[in-house]
Image (cartoon, rainbow, N blue to C red):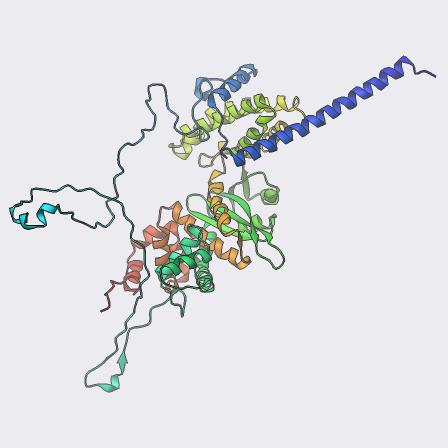
Amino acid sequence: MSKSLDEQIHELKDKLARAAHERDEYRKLYELASIELERLRRHIFGQKAEHVDPGQMQLAFDAIVQMLAGAAASPDTGTASAPEDDGAAPGGGSGGNGKGRRSTPHGRQKLPEHLPVERIELLPPEVRDERAAEMVRIGEEVSETLEWRPASFVRLQIVRPKFAARGEPEAGVVIADVADSPVPRSLAGPGLLAHVLVSKYGDHLPLHRQEKIYERQGVHLARSTLCGWVGSCAEVLGYLVAAMAKDALSAHCIAIDATGVLVQAKDKCRRGHFWVLVADRDHVLFRFTPRHNQDGPKEFLRGYKGYVQADASSVYEELFRTEQVTEVGCWAHCRRRLFEAMSSDRERAMTALGFIHQLFAIDKATKDLAPGRRTEHRRSHAQPVLDAFRAWLDSEELLVLPRSPIAGAIGYARNQWTALTRFLEDGRLRLDNNRSELELRREALGRKNWIFVGSDDGAEWNAIIVSLIASCALHQIDPWAYLRDVLILLPSWPRDRVLELAPKSWKQTLENTDARERLAASPWTAPVTLAA
């Protein structure tokens, strides 16, 4: 029996619905494949930074702002032009006349004045023979060349003369006390120990490479010996880093992030994780955990009351449930998701990036203001942009294909909205978490050199030393000179004053009489007398 017309219509509607569903699924797969292809292309051929042409972004942004009913588009918000933000391409200027552009230096670079000078005189042939008596020196021309003199090992002999009172043998023999060594019964002085630490954790030279370098200089230092020195130094310096971690809990805001690392094991390498915590402008702290879960952040920040800036990873969810910690979102992560969605929905992604561009431009214009004034300026200028952006997100969320890349980017912004707008509360808060990501590059760059850490203990040593080197960079301190002096001071330094040796307090500590006297009394910093 033939089907009725209504049944045929119903079947056709079902087929049409299935075809539309399959089309949407294939479209999602296509968009996801496009994103992965773009990631791979950028990884192999392109730059990693998320740069977008500000002109194109501004066109898309302005068109949407004009369409949003009730959106505030006053001149103060900066929606009429495309000011630079921290994601703009370098070298941008203010116009075709070149004014405001960074000038490019020309000519030969001037050599630093603090370098030692070695003088070499080149005499012409006329003053090196019998005609020299007829020549009169009337001046000279000097040209400078930057040359290299290889660093060298020295045998430092610490001599302790013995004395006895003349005519009083019962008084006994007097001799100076043995100098405290950072590594007892070790051949290495604090300068060499600091050099090994900075080379390994600051310059990313694994110990087997250092062993070969020292061999070329005529000194055999086995890798096992170097490893023992690193472990002993990390044990001594661990007290200092622990004090820094305790002091970091009083910070106003702590930025946190993590990256994976391979840990050597019997059968195959297992996975571990390095974490970084940047406490205001005071400390940079690295931590290691065997697993990437919620236990790490909870343990690091136990007892902390303040702002924590992080990405939207689930490992921070339990931390943010407490009333003591306030979440601060990262606009750079939000921008990254939109940038990745450009390959599948360029128009919407460019529009959203335009809003974020305005937020960074407003923030950049207020960077030199006091925190109170900056908070007021942010609220008056950024709030209208945020209101317009939220209205756009809410309307576009209903139109985009579910589970598509642009839908994921829009969903991320909407779900993180409270945390992302937290910067309006306090002018000291940043819009992005880039400072912790930049610090984490230390481990990412080192990982490309040493590939894996030898054990959990080796990872802990890494975290301790890198914490000090990164904090030195934060306070513009030479890490080698700092580690050498700290290794000299720590063995006899009072444990209740150990925080005075942190990079945060180091410049002030060197001005104190106690620290200067201790360093001056150390044989490791005493003037050297060349042996005959």
